[in-house]
Image 1 (tube, rainbow, N blue to C red):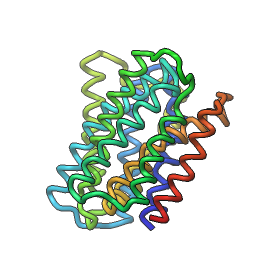
Image 2 (cartoon, rainbow, N blue to C red; image 1 turned 30 degrees about the vertical axis):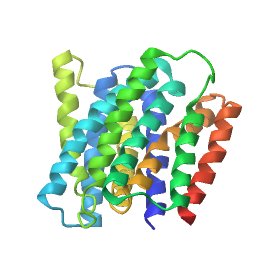
Image 3 (cartoon, helix red, strand yellow; image 1 turned 30 degrees about the horizontal axis):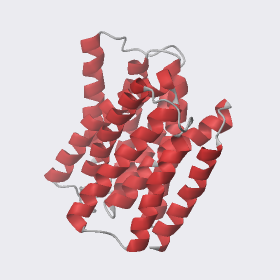
Image 4 (cartoon, one colour; image 1 turned 90 degrees about the vertical axis):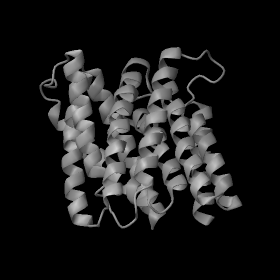
Length: 274
């Protein structure tokens, strides 16, 4: 059940990022992200009430810390996506973000079974291949920087949420969304950017926030059971973002990326069987 719940996360976040890319390219990126997090906060509050749970003070503190990482990560991710595209930013962020929760889970719990370990290794390779647009080409340093920063911060976010107790439900995500809203607002004020997004973009921000809230909620529930596996699924959102870009925006998938999709399916099968 935790695997099925966890699979909802990358699909929801992947589509949210697909819409978010379109939104960010229209302008006023920080204002759009602020409204995305406002809607994510509202979505999380509803889901937390419906799901229930009894969070401890530690759970809420961990959740609050995750919001700081998530807000700065999303700013870097969307800046990279809108300026350089998904091709390099995505795989760098995905691989970096997947390694951190896996390393923490291994340190706390120990090594998983050989089948699951092999599946996670294949999954990390799949994430990398899915995002490679130009194998063998020169690296874009700006894209690399945005991807690396976003990956480290999202890995930090995923780890903190995964360390919350399984009895806390979705509640730890809620203080994190308050922190995220406050952090983005502070960045806007310091950098003197507009708070109001472009006219007509709030409904799109609402959709991204709704899907992002669902994605974070389902990830948290899965990560409370198995941080490493849920963390890997979480990073596969970048692959789904690329799929949606190919379907709806006409981006072309290379043979390397298609191979990555095949490896991702194999990785999921190995993890489920293990």
